[in-house]
Length: 178
Image 1 (cartoon, rainbow, N blue to C red):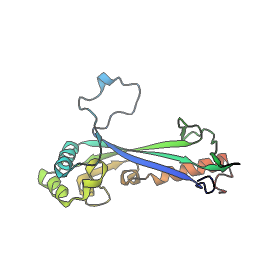
Image 2: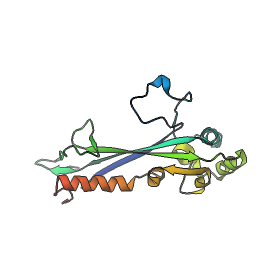
Image 3: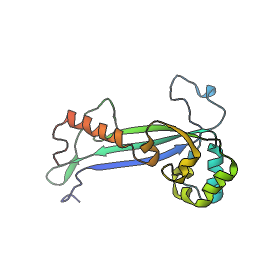
Image 4: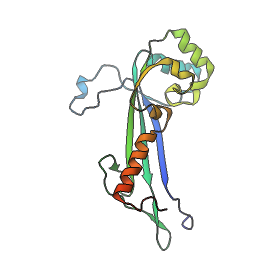
């Protein structure tokens, strides 16, 4: 609505990948581990949830959250998205008027007995979660350790988000005068 533009748009989404891959561009695909990396969406049912969790059991998965910030500038008529200069922590989107970051966290699953995994699946907690688990709930019992931002695994990398806001304010002191 041009008469009531949003003050700030914050968009984020989190995905889970099985079998975390090395994060270096110097490794050729032929040198990567034999296990294919799979994008895990929300499980279709309890059987799919069990399959996902057994695949990650005793393994490492990668949780990635993409986050984009944009804010409008009033114009006559309507509004535009304010141009934000490139910052070291973030990169421009295809739309050069926004900035994005991604946060990556490794989740190490314990080598759980199948009856523990089945009990978690039976709880129903993971059925509406990407990757089929909720680390902040009962799903935490399946996890041995987290390498990176725990809050990213929950769904929103708050520390990186606030660092991004600080950088935007440093670059443009009027950024939050909305």
